[in-house]
Structures are given as structure tokens and as C-alpha cells.
Length: 216
Figure 1 (cartoon, rainbow, N blue to C red):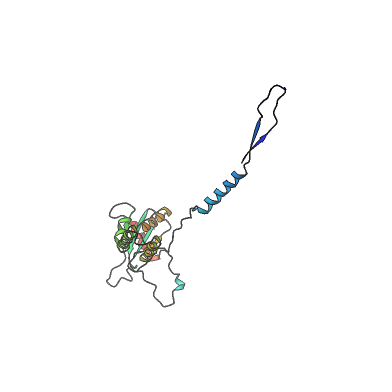
Figure 2: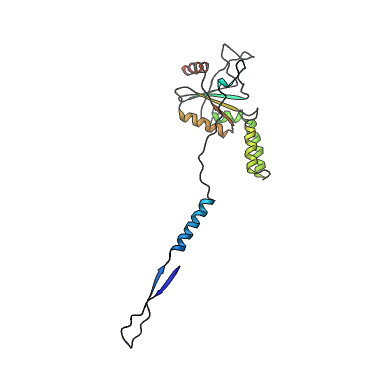
């Protein structure tokens, strides 16, 4: 608080009277206290930015599968294989020529890209993950009408993403694949609301299939 300190007058004559001089001293203690109170208030009420993490699902290790048991099958799955500036995919289980599917079909790699065209990854994922995207639209409408809370919306959406009919994605790379393409692919999968994304090692059969495709 400001304090007024009075000092004696400087009159030097008997007949003259001068106004008394005043000196002002400001006490900064209350202002410092106020600054600390405001700082404490903002620290307690502010939300600090949290580091963003990319959740990825990792499949069970081979040794975790009981001996003699068949490896788990991936329902409604798609496998992406990256190599340098190329990106390929195939749907369903991997079936080489030595072990074709029940209908006699074998796995073939299909090339795609990050472009906006019909052969682009975004259009492809939009078609394959229609189950989740349609249900998400219904949840968006309920949230907009305030029929459900934000927490309920997020929990319901996470549950839909892991259902049997939801699309699951495996990502495999060779030793020439670019990290940028891997990140771009994961971004596209997140945009398409794919809930299960698993980076796994490429198999020798898939690698041979990839090399044959790159030669063409």
C-alpha cells in the first residue's frame, strides 16, 4: 500500500511559510502476494498439453500360441505391404500357391497410393470400413442432439471399432520401406476409423511375392 511520509518544512524566515513537502513510498508486498495468487490460480485451472501417443495393437507372439493349435484367423482384415515408395495390399488370409484357399484362389498383391483417386488408400478404406463409419455417423447425430455424453460417445465408438465386422489392418514392410509412408498409412487408417492397427513382420512368402511384383 502507498504510505505518505511527512517531512518537516523548509522555512528559513520568520515571516514566510512554505507548504510541507511529502515523500511517497510504495509497499510492493501486497502486489507480490497478488501475483503469486494469480499464478497459483492459473496453474491449478489450466490444462497442459499432453503428449500424443499412437495406440497400436500388437498380435500375440508365436510362442504364446499352444503347440498344435492353428494361428488365429483375422476376420475382415486387410494387409498392407510397404516398399520404398510403393504400397501394396491384399484382403483376408495369406494363401500362397502351395496352399490355396478353399475356392482355389491365391493371394495377389494390389498396388495402391496416397492419392485422392479411386485407387487411393482413403477411398479403399472408406469402402472396406463402412460398418464402422455408418455406426459412427449414428453416434455423431446423437452427440449433436445431446442425447449422449462425450464420454459415452468415445466408449461406444471404441467398442464398435473392435467388433467382428469392423476392419482390421496389418502393416508389413521390407528393408527399403520409408518411415514417412508408414506414418502416412497409419494416418489414413485413423481417418477411416480403423481401430485395430498391427505392425508385424513380413513373412518369407509375402516377401517373395513383393519382389516379384516390384520386378513387373
